[in-house]
Image 1 (cartoon, rainbow, N blue to C red):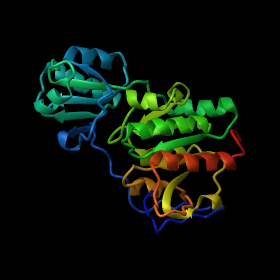
Image 2: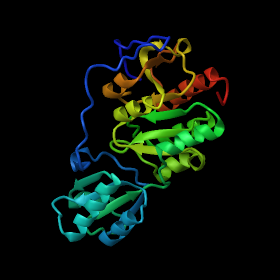
Image 3: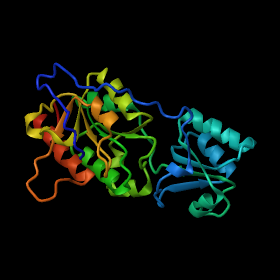
Image 4: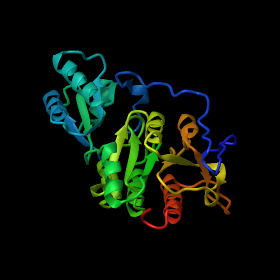
Length: 288
């Protein structure tokens, strides 16, 4: 959790503190170069070769990341880029050495896709699930979680806590890899996971649907003092930097977890569990 000394909250929920700065738009086509490619989960399901990737994209297969040889612009690659843009998939232009490094077949033809181990769901499905259970929507929003073990553990926690879904960003975060699926201990079969382009904008859209948002921060109000009932989203930040400033400014509440030890921070998945079950407690169990 990251400090935020300026956070304010009116317990009567009459005022929201959204901050003054506007969210910066992502690059229009979602392209990136190798400098921000980050570390990749070696247990991701890879699809290599131009034809194989084209068919995967056209079939609607869930793709987390797409790597293309930097400078390559021939016909098949143009088709891949077109299909990727249509599906909102992040494209990363990398060197041949980088492709050779992550290739499992040695015949990548300048194109490698990382396929998700599970299909992603939709925002409507989250609300449908809440309606089917007769409950106010309860979701976990994960702001750039990069450790697949953390993501898997949080999805497992979300399922046990009765949350109706988990929302993750498309870029600079781990997707539904094989490691995530294994760590979730089967929770992915029951808990919808939705991938969005812009987390701050998503929070604004969900507010229009009646949701409130709380994020973890050491300088926030004690979680026991906040009203965490009703239609609510729990925001958990990156393992190192916490919730980003832009996302934190969109939250209505900042919650601090009481700590008495010499260490003043928690693992992201542990923080999600502590705050998640405080929400469960205030909601009166697994409903309402």
